Image 1: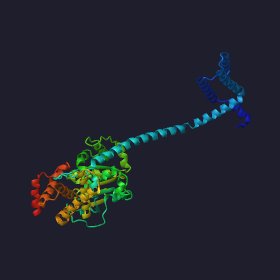
Image 2 (image 1 turned 180 degrees about the vertical axis):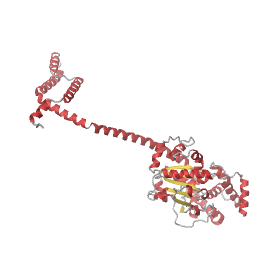
Image 3 (image 1 turned 60 degrees about the vertical axis):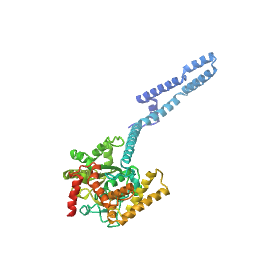
Image 4 (image 1 turned 90 degrees about the vertical axis):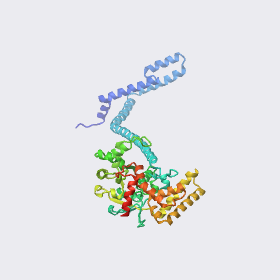
Length: 478
C-alpha cells in the first residue's frame, strides 16, 4: 500500500475529484446569482461600472462600487490559497450535511408523526369533552320514574343522592325482598371503595351488583357516570381511578346483541352513541373506543340484566358479556340485576358479587334533608341561606318523626324507591295520607305497572293492574 504523505495530500487537494469539482462549480454559480440579485458587481465588470458612475457624477454609487470591486480584485489576487481554504471549508460543511441527511430526514418524519398524533388527540379530546357533556345532560336529573304523584320540581341527582352500601355476598344468598329487615353489619363499603382497589385487585374489575326492585341500582350507575363526566371521582374517593364511563341499558340493547352476536363491545358502544335521540350529535370513532378498551381506560356498566324478559335472551346476552370481558381483560366491568334474573354459570368472568344493602335511618334522614333543601331552593327561587335551610330542616324533621312513629313506614323508607315516593307524596300534599291504604295502593300501582312503562320495558306478564292485584291477593292469603 503506498504511503500518503504531504505531497500526496497536496496533490489530492490540487486535483479534486469530479464530484467535488461539480459541487464547487454549482456553489460559484449560486454566489454569482446572489451577487446579481443584490446588484453587486464582480471582477472587471466592477471597474467599468465604477468609471461610469464617476463620469456621471454619481460619487456615492462610484465609492460603493469601487470598494466592492477592490475587494473582489483583492480576493482574486489573494488567489489560490484563499480560494482553496474557502472551498475546503465549504466542502467539509456540505460533506457533513450529506452525512446527516438520513438523521435530519428522520427528525422531520418524527416531527410530522408527532404533529399528526397531537392533532388526532386534539380531535379525540374534543370528542371526549362533547361525550362527557352528553353524559351530564343525560344523567344530571334525579329520576322518579313512573311515580303516580309527581314531584313539584326536577332535582339535580348529585344534590340529593345518597351513596348505596354493599355487602360482598354469593348470589344464592342475596335477598329478593323489597323491604328488608335493615342493616345486619356495620362493615359495609360503597362502590368507590371497590373501584379504588380495582387497580391492584383484579377481582374488582368484574363486579355484579345484585339487589331488590327499587334498591337504587340504575340510579347508582347514573351517578357514577355523572361523577366521571364531571371529573369529580376524587371527591368520592381520593384513590378512585380515572376512567371513561359507558352506561349501557340491557333491555334496549338485547335485540341488537342477539341479532349481531359477533359484534364487539366497541361496535355496540359506537352504534349507541350515534343515536339521534342523544342531546348532542356525537361522531364516535370505533378505533378510539377499541384502543381505550384494550388499554383498560373504560368503565363499562351494564344495567338491568333481569329486565330482559325471555330467559333464553338473557342467557345469550350474558354469554356475550362474558366474552367481552375475556376480549378486554384490562377493562373494568359492572353489571346490575335482581337476584332472580342472574345466573352465575352464564357469567364465568364475574369475580365479585355485591348485594345492595337497605338504607339505615341516618341515610333516610340525610335524604329528607337533601330533598327538602333542593325543593325549597326551587320553590322560593333563591340561593341557599340560613332561613331557607331552616325551613327545609323543619319539613324534613316533620316527615322523619312520622316515619319513626310507624314501623311499616320506617321499613318501607329503607328502600330508595319507596323512600322517594314517601318524600314526593309528603312534599306534594303537605302530609302523608291519613289512610295508609291510599299510600300502599299507590306503591303497588307504581311497582306493578307504572315503573315498567316508564322504563320502556316489555311486560312479560300480560295482565292489567286489576288482574295483577287479584293474583297477589290470592298469594298473600297463602
